[in-house]
Length: 221
Image (cartoon, rainbow, N blue to C red; front, side, top):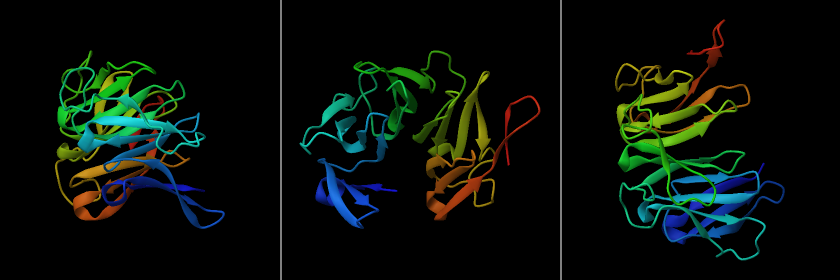
């Protein structure tokens, strides 16, 4: 398939590598790096610009490459509901709700389509706080609407279920063992439900098998 690549820091753009033709094409112009990229069900490309404190988006079918609009954030750092502070990972669900790992605010924000004020879904200021985050950098939402978060400075992956959030991997502190991380950055699922995590300081990618017990609850492997 095609691959979308952040090339914002030096060249001010997001590139698409087309598998069929083995060529690159510019699909978005930006004025800083995209620390997270996401394409929603409507072929809208989202870019989290950490250094600009906002998330921007553009419809890929729009012929104007400069047609970016703001999806979240004011462009001024802060902790108000309409502000972000070094946003990193992003996720957009089938309802076009935007989830943002708001790293330096130690929270995950949830923005409804067209709304400028976000709701804190995870972190100490959330509506139902069940976990404390320290610099979250990656986020995913599964088909059951459970959140999975890279809690970078706590060196762990946390996940939600009907009882709230809990640690899934990296629950025993920083390190280089197979069940540890040192500043993880991003995560992804494959079609079988396995989790892949970029473990930044150890210079590796870790794979974890996510299984369910007889009660349907997730357990780690």
